[in-house]
Length: 102
Image: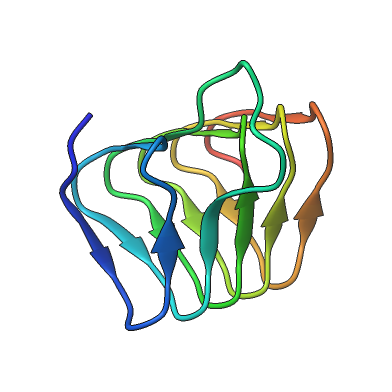
């Protein structure tokens, strides 16, 4: 993992989050939110996180994932590679979404 990521003027990524390369975090989004967990928070390579999203501590987001605007990813969630989470969707605690899903 790398510290190479692009942020909007107001997107925030907690320093403990493992961020891949070529990651974009949209306006007013928070990555690494809530109570910290024992599980690492991982954002894979080539991920786009839209505006006004919240990714809680303990989430694991694969490579080439798109989180559309206003999405919420709760603790313990795993999102597989090349998956798209559409506008405003919430993925709740410990859910798993496979690869290549919409």
